[in-house]
Image (cartoon, rainbow, N blue to C red):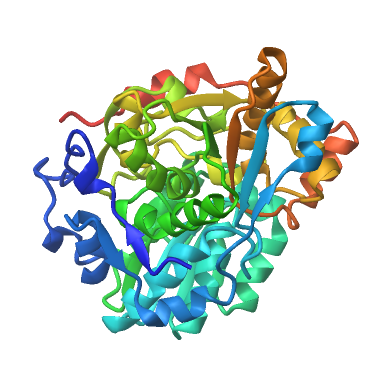
Length: 440
């Protein structure tokens, strides 16, 4: 298991656009973020250091499930009759069932070191909320989770997981915050969104002296913690005497995808592997990189967060209620957006029914019931493998698999019974939400 996280910031070919204060529109300083985050995480957000040592207390907990397994998808290759070699790094073996635990444990640790007694956070599909619930329990920190309402209803056992680890979980929009009450007054049946849940959690943290806010994706320090995935994979593929030609992952905020590809990006930037193809996949119903403009926007609906330069559908955009709740976010990690703008990362969008078809194929060949989020990446992996069958090229494809779908069986049942809906991109909502982009 690697003992350092890799920080790509000093290796970027162009500096990352600065994060701006929502009031002054000037670059934020560490002191600006201090009311929300512990200084240990704030320093990582801006760190010029290429590698950051993983604290021993964090390593001890990591070792209860890391390193995770790198698989060769022999049965899927045979089913597709492709000369391609397909590998997948599977993060579903953590206690919480996904990659989210890599940063949840780290964030809980740094909060504990600064005496934080309580944390407020949001969660989409519940993977982040359940992971942070476990992390907070290990470090004896109280946790309040605002879970996007549609996922709260679709995935009740994620809530049960959080409660089993001692967290308090409520559906968002909730009556517990002004942001939630305002939305409920406007639309009592609002399905919620990650942007709205973030507003509630940030408001909660800002109004209490004993509480910090925690985010499970998007920010630089979160992507930093996830690079243990790619660093492990590099060591494992070296043992397998293999190197990827294509890396594929799903994108919501982008932390699992980035955690896999960022350690490989070193080779693309240095010229050691200039033709490495890196593909991020998002829902066609919430196509941030493939349809949104590259602009400064808030990370939340209420406009409480700093302004991030990212591809965005507008902070007021409420995505359709697809089962991939972790991908229903209007923005994307600034690092991924920056690399996409520079032409170093590709983006594709896939429809829900097509991704579930791919997920069923993966389950029936590899035996793993994937969460709806990584099904998006599986769809593109299959597409690329079939291209290899047509061309005869024996490319090596690496899938960043973020976690299992054991609490998503209701979605599987809907698909297998022919009742799963597909959703088109709501063009009318996009025009309205983009009109609310802040002036910078």
